[in-house]
Amino acid sequence: AQSVSQHNHHVILSEAASLELGCNYSYGGTVNLFWYVQYPGQHLQLLLKYFSGDPLVKGIKGFEAEFIKSKFSFNLRKPSVQWSDTAEYFCAVNARNTGKLIFGQGTTLQVKP
Amino acid sequence: EAQVTQNPRYLITVTGKKLTVTCSQNMNHEYMSWYRQDPGLGLRQIYYSMNVEVTDKGDVPEGYKVSRKEKRNFPLILESPSPNQTSLYFCASSPGGAGGYEQFFGPGTRLTVL
Image (tube, rainbow over the protein chains, first blue to last red):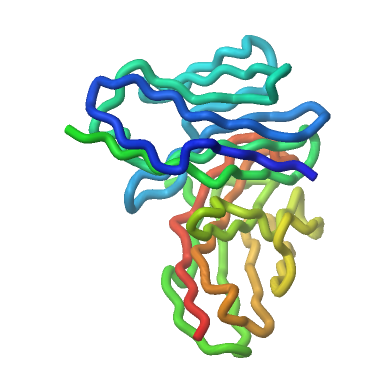
């Protein structure tokens, strides 16, 4: 069965610090990968996605993620966080050509001003 | 405005009383899906629909029913709610027929079953 694991459940950073959130998945076939963000009181929205091609993908608000197929990982990064990045972040994996989307447990990021 | 709407947004009910949470999208999307969000568990998929009249189970379908009679609507039905279905529920839609496209989420429905 597919599963997605996010290693960091709660991260606290100061503004301007660098961010890396881990995401690993288990599935032997081809996947589509996503990072979603949920700002306080708002809908979930897409940060970035990987379908194919360049394994380093860039998303909104300066976020990027790297797909490392050999490690089944899709870690999210941002060089310098801002207070407005305080939110919950979810990694998600779709087995290609299926309707299933599996989410990780989520990581709460708190950025101190 | 392109959006996914859910009703009601908040609901408190009692064990065994049938309820329906409606979901509607105005983007002509093929795919719709329901999730529940619980602390420490992230979002878990309940059911999804890749097209009208086509539905399939996600990871946690027990205790839920869905139907997709028309493209824009995808109601979630709890025939006999139990306290373990107390959760935050999200509906989502996407333009593709499978799950590999960006999903657009509704605002959520917070359900409490007493």
